[in-house]
Image (cartoon, rainbow, N blue to C red; front, side, top):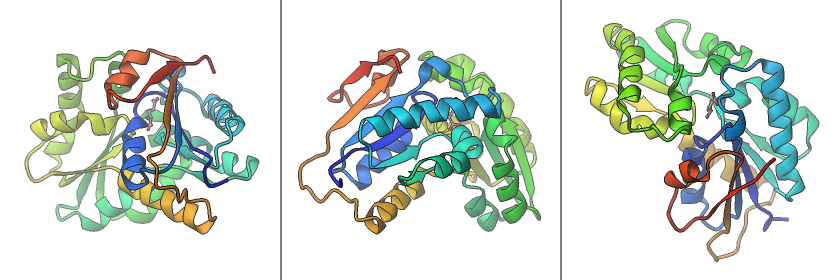
Length: 259
Ligand code: DGL
């Protein structure tokens, strides 16, 4: 069982930012990555639709023999993780915006969070914010249009810079010292974000923490792949293969799959 792959899915190409953290920490693990780009963005869909798309993705990965599922999407996690965990009896790891470390460490008592509408309106997100950030100012902004630009290969466009300036200005005005990236597509915006934000603003995401959690859960269930060989990593998308390929190493193959 430990040689079985780690199954990872996202609404599209953004979850590759999580795959990279997993692969860096656990290079011997076999992985299967599913990009549901044909249905991106999830962020504007209803909870019911996000849940049923998540079920479709999880079932595909379980049918491929995955030993653990990583929901590499904040929107799918915050809307569907409880139901997924109730339904399937393999470990399911999700990703949520890193509100807690930002709220604990802020000096200016103001933090920014950029995420999808689906994440910011979820019950789980509100619970976390109430628990850790009730005594500070939290400037939330929906990153409307960002996922669409990344999915259409316009990551480095002027349109992207303009959108980010628009969403970040109220956060800069509120003197935030932490920006939380609440969507797995957003780590790819890092160079632009660094350019737009004042130097003292720290930008955080949950990728590394999730990879460490996956390792701990695999250890706990005796599922760590102890092979010394480099893992076999497969990438599938029901969208444009070239957009997914542009975000990962040239040596990795991306295949089109209608799932
Ligand atoms: N990567 C997804 C997330 O983390 C993007 C959501 C979307 O498709 O809108 O939320």
